[in-house]
Length: 232
Image (cartoon, rainbow, N blue to C red; front, side, top):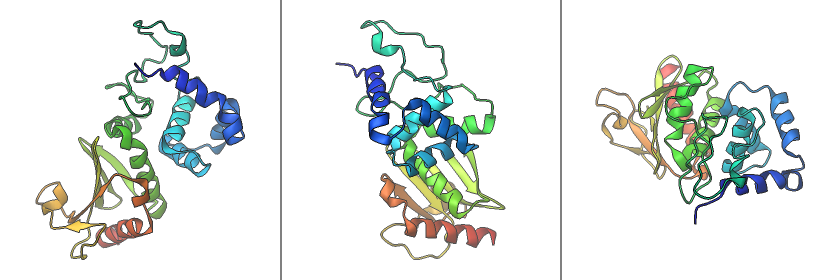
């Protein structure tokens, strides 16, 4: 039996006040008051308020949808009838067994083209999109000057020079780092030519990421080392 995401969304919204202390309108106001420039920043802020990844992403998508629930009408749809929503930029076919991703359809663009390109690439991470967003937010925190440029299947990360790249996949994320002769350990592996991005690349080490708990002090220290080695 197909999952009714309209019902799931309604249950999520109805339980907001009890579970978080604010209803949907109050959360929309609170998000707006933060005046955060990027969607990733909103999700990171919501995570700090106690939301799990999927719920923070869902709430951010509702905010990006003008405060309107994404599946507002689908809960009352008749079986077998596909409802045409006003917001056609939001995907209507979430993968089975996971929270709805609420991602833009291919080719859709927001007002900011670079941000839209990044969102489009992050959508390919599927269930690992929140993990990618968390990692990006944490890298920004330890390296504020870092830029994140989508390039096909990965995100180039750098300021003056590229010091990392985040490979996007639906089964795992791969963080490539320019660590030179840094010894490998349980977290980071070396010996992958070009960090898996080409023999001429300086990215010498790689970390496979599948869990938010991996984004810890040790990993962020490696990120800082890579940035310092290449740029400072």
